[in-house]
Length: 141
Image (tube, rainbow, N blue to C red):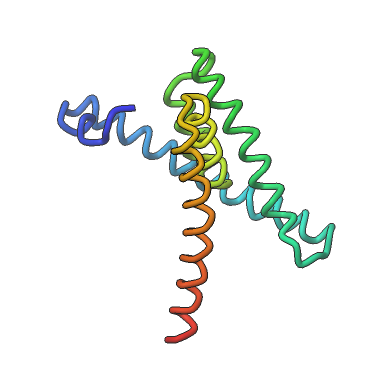
């Protein structure tokens, strides 16, 4: 995927393409966010537990679908635009855990076991610490 500045520097046609992609990703994010909320709430209502079954289910489903989307794209079955709409848009709105999972699998597939391990540990531990810090910061003010 080319960086955003490469689209902008090539004139109106590329700018139109960038706008279409941006709108598609935005629409997908909206769809994914709504689906995440509805599914998570439905699962939570069914299990009535303090364990986040809804979020766990959303993350696992997102991982399944992002794997499917990236493989379809790799096989040429779907276009780059559809991949962006589905993976970045819908699944990005549905769960960012799916992107994390896909990137980790990519590192493992490339034999980058050390980087994959660091990425997993850092993402989980730093993510948890930052969530705690954010909550604490808000509680203080």
